[in-house]
View 1 (cartoon, rainbow, N blue to C red):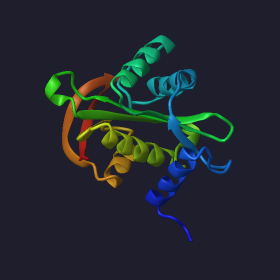
View 2: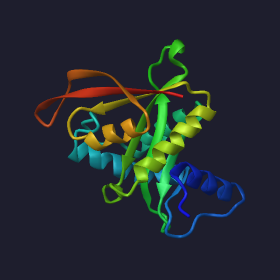
View 3: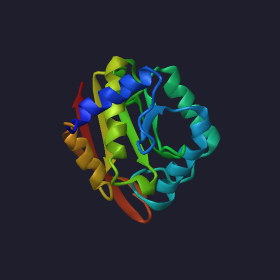
Length: 190
């Protein structure tokens, strides 16, 4: 009998808690570690160079990611990776404060990036499932997704499938690769 996605992840988390791991052909979702940052930088910088899904223009350094990683950890917010059986990081996801003002403290913005070879293999679904669950546990009440309005249709569809609602569209707020880009704003209440 096949398990639904939620039941399957409950089983995987129970196995992890007991010190066992899913079978070797499974993708493991776990807390990110400092040792993962080199692969995280590689994945993220691919998107800076080759896509409009991030509005960053310049490659980020390992030091910049170390600072971001430590900041997210200091806030006790989730930062997870999807790891293959061979130890390769297939993708990562984290949430960070949506805005800096104190009244926003229970609202976060999610970020999910996948190694190109992992696209279409439900890795993004597993990562988003995990950060939503961990965000709830951390006391988060709202998750905001700010998604490029060009070239990120799969990200919009993923968020819709998790119940994120469209809250707006900001046209022409970013300029990359010689063209204006907007963002789609989506939100999920926990």
